[in-house]
Figure 1 (cartoon, rainbow, N blue to C red):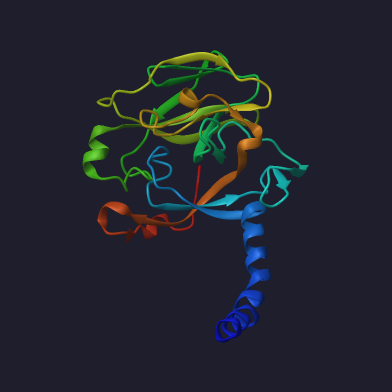
Figure 2: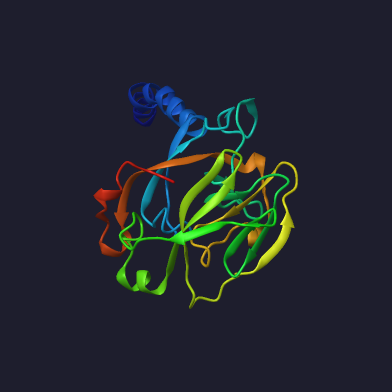
Length: 236
């Protein structure tokens, strides 16, 4: 009897009052917006390990919470967008950049990206640029940084990329044509990213939102020291 009284008390005083707020919060995280912690460096120097990024799940459509069923669609992912998606081979949650849209032909030659046969434009990236300056000195010295200009329907999209010449990597790929309803994903850390070069093109249904900004950041190599200069910064 005593155990039943305790269970009834817990239900009445704790579980029942918190159930509805918990359901509303998790539904909002599923369908509206979320914060995604990034544990890997595949998007360096744009996103670093230890960044927590804001995900706009209403960027492209409205979904039924906890499902992939869409109630409405008002936009399509664009070349240059950073999105959260699920890898088609094992369902891993990923943060990657779209470099190829449906109908595009994607090719990589010595880490240089070609879209529809057109080489994308690259320019030097300053050592004090955002993201680059937050890397460890040894990593900065081992990498080559550039600003990539992706051609888009609206003009160009500029963002940082990096290469690691001393690391064995897939630097030549394709050409491959992106089929309808799919997208080609790549990490900005071109020589250290598991992306569409390895698991194939991404189905549209597996893209769940757009990464818009870094909300908070902690340096994993230095006892979670806050990187205050990265707090509330927009993602390019």
